[in-house]
Each structure stands twice: as structure tokens, then as C-alpha cells.
Amino acid sequence: MEASLFEDDGAKSIACGSDEAGRGPLAGPVVAAAVILPDNFPVGILGDSKKLSQKKREEAEKIIKEKAVWAVAAVSHKDIDRINILNASMLAMKKAYEKVRKAMQPDILLVDGNKRPDVDIPCTAIVKGDSKIPEIMAASILAKCERDRLMELADRKWPEYGYRKHKGYPTKAHIEAIKKNGPSPIERMSFHTEADETKELF
Image: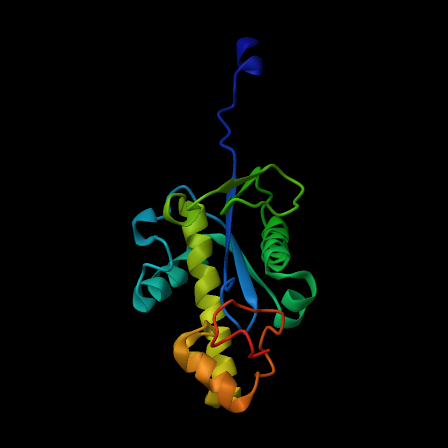
């Protein structure tokens, strides 16, 4: 009986994964998600969100939301312009984590990439984590699905920019729409590139 008092209780640490979507676009918010997966989660449905079809992402999103502890958070194009996209991405991940923490306190935060948000628990950045770590994969899927929906809503409001198709990324069609119509209300005005066709847009 006495020995059992000093035995490891076998408690498993709780990992929360976080990732963002929308660092590269010229328009719209950056969106992050944070996810804690249960032990029995069907990880076979997961993958790098960028490599999954829209149908597969949305099917996985539904199961993640049903079975996991999760949250999403967005940082607007205005805040991206104000604090830059890297800081905005870190802020979005921090906000998503803080929402999850209200439901379940994780022991560690695992994030995709090589930068870490400022959070109150140990945090590890993992390059290509969205193709290696199930919790980060799940967060990647939620973040991309949420951002895609936001850009589809933007398309309804400003159809002349084609946001439903390119989601704000710097495609030829998007650049031509900006040249024709001027920057939309959700354009990231701080984004400049070296390319001749875009450097004068803003």
C-alpha cells in the first residue's frame, strides 16, 4: 500500500496543436486554430490541409469539431497592417490557444513552423508540423476551412475581386482585379512584393 503512494500515476501529458492559415494572401485575415485530440481520435483522416481536397478537409473538420477540444481565432487585415503578418499569426495562435484553455488546460503547445507564440505553457515549434503531428494537422484543417469560409463571405460582398476562387492569394486574376478596381476594403495595404506587376498596386 505504501509503495503505491510513490508510483507514477501514468498520467499522460495533454498536447494542444496550433496552426494558422492565410500568411501569404494579399487580402483578408489570418486565421489560427488550436486543437486537443482525444486518445481515440481517428488520426487517419488527418493530413496537411494544403494537400487535402476541399471535400476531405471539410469531412475531417466535422469530425474534429465533434470529437476534439478546439477553437479558432482570426486577426484582421487592419491588425496585420499594424503589427505585421508574423506577429499577427502568432497573436492568432495565442488567441486560439487561450480559447481552448478555457475548456481544457494542455501541458504543452505544439505549433507549426519555426516561431513560437507567447503563451503561458511550454511551446515547441515544429517545422512542417502540419504534416507530422496530428494535433497540428487538425488545427491546420480547422484554420484553413474557417478562413476559406470567411473569404467566400467576402466574395459575396465584393464579387469583383474573385475571393471565392483565390481566397485573397496573389494570383494573376486577383492582381488584375486590384488593378481594375483598386484595393478592396480588406486588402492588406502593407503587403509589397518585388514583382513588377504588384509592386505599384498599393
